[in-house]
Image 1: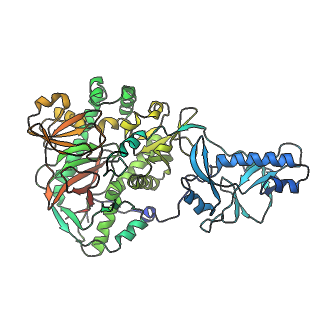
Image 2: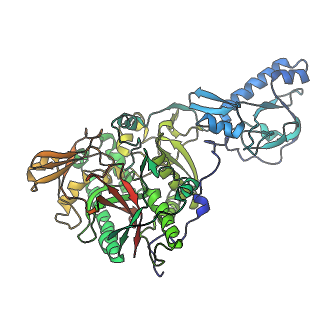
Image 3: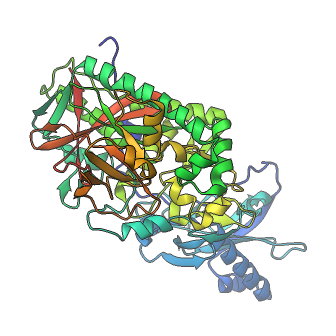
Length: 201
Length: 387
């Protein structure tokens, strides 16, 4: 064919769509961190009691760090439009619905939190940790953070990590309100019988 | 131009599943119909559809240039006053456009006649750019269609090139894409555009129109609270401009696809304007605004809402009486009138040609059939070849 009037080649692998459901966003993109931070000891605890058991006399710190990690988890965890998509990635009964100022979605339960510098003077550090129980997930039985770092098997609890890993994960913006677009199509799609619900032409 | 029956490809439904084409059947009725195809000659494609599409697009742009500078015309186009300046700005900045679809009545013999310009949110893009391309490949390999057969369809190639140009223009490496919830067809169309953008090297993020958020400093955000800087929205400007977040559009300073000047290009008030500026053009149908109906010198008219989708609220008026009407929720912003010109019939089917443009380049056609004279959203999509 000398001068074809159709696309010459199409990347079929790009077009193939039979794949696992993907989350709306996988965590929050990590800030690019310098690699030269000091290593420090860090431990993962599954909850505040777990922490307190290992650190007698630090109950209040353990609890405060846990609450901080929970708050960070809600802000930075992967969010899904449906429970089934979330459970596909994290396992049955491992997700919960969240309604907050950013909207309604589904996210995994925090599986634990990583703590560092609890017993030393100066500030301590915490961050939420997640894991998956789904056989479809590459993170099955691994400790992962919301920026996608994998800390290996759930049986590991003690690490030497860069201070940088505790830097706050960014929430780019605070969303005050949602749902300000889409009212016209709601009004119009309730109309008539043959309409497919969309409004594209 | 012929309609030719053919055996559907074995296992095409499985292939549709693999490629994520989920809306080939809707409400139990076939939408993608490969029990037949249309055959055109190269001359028909190039002389009767491709060249006129390029010309008409330029004529439409001339009208846009006139409308954005006229308060009187912007009023006639039912564009909210708050957007007159932003629309003019987007036009004079020459914000890049992505694609549009011109709908024609064409029978293979006489000049194609323009029904309307879907310049803001056209669908059936995936079926056109990818799925009918794959169909031709399959049928040629199966030996059912001549190996020399071609197709007027460089859509995917041109969309990828265009995304690369737009990325260059705005210096982007990422773009957001949005459509409404609960529609496989719109989501499929947007996914296709995401695939084309990704092929052009862009990172793509998706958010439903209903989920778009407004941040405390007046940016739009996705569900991850990330700021939306560039947005392809499969959602019409005329809705956005009238909705709650419409007042925040300007401050959100987004690179929009389609750009805001498309609210003029996609407006049906364009049709009477075209007829005024290019009277008796062979590819145009006579058209009038409501207040000039007395000048309408033909006995049968089509009445169309200024804003509407998929034939909704279109009615046919003969000697002042409505003889055929399609229901719908549109029309509150007024109507335009177009001379009646029937779709050609192939067998029992009324056939409509969609002629695609990527920016200002003709890029292919789609063929849709309907049992009714008004092409509605339940019409079927048929592939085509050039031979």
